[in-house]
Length: 304
Image (cartoon, rainbow, N blue to C red; front, side, top):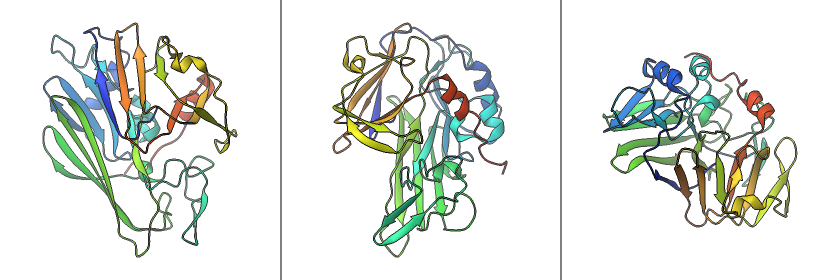
């Protein structure tokens, strides 16, 4: 699930989840290319070389020990993703310079063709910044800046025809993790763009989703939206919420209430995402088992 503006965390009780990602966290802690941020008992590991991604975001257990038994606010990186430089296996990756979905678009009487840009998908999904290494700028124990300087070229993930620079800032403090993104157009003409982060949240058999929407974009198998129609899943707005495993979803929803909650009732904790106007659309990605397996087969980056 993507939030277009910011997110808030509500931990209603100090009940820790099953430590399913401890082995991956220990591997990440020993990975020389990752950058660790610390504030009190909160930890973030960043992967600048893998799309400027967040690899791990967790709180230490109450006894202040190691990562064993940690509470993970995002789905943590897998050992396979670290080895393959795979942004789709990270906790959250950067999304920038987006012409969402169709690989060919016209803007200001100019055709933008990204069909041969080396994307593993049929369309220009999420732009290209997630497939590029980011340069490390300022670093402190609680903050880091990452930079991407884009020059158009013929290499994969370089076909975007506009020159630009992008910055991500990650900062930990007593209220949580703050991610700030900016893009500066360096081309000699207007540039269409979008930006954000693509988080993955922990998913257990008990995970439920609560939100309100007006309608759903029905789509083709390759995710091109075709019809804004009736919304068939009433459970989303119910007090119980929608079980994450109930449907195979990768859809856009219109008329969003700008608030959505992911709830882990067995762990007595939840995460609520908020957005400001005009961000009235929500994307809900909760794939079935076959789709999850296919996504994990994406090969990622070559080793730099």
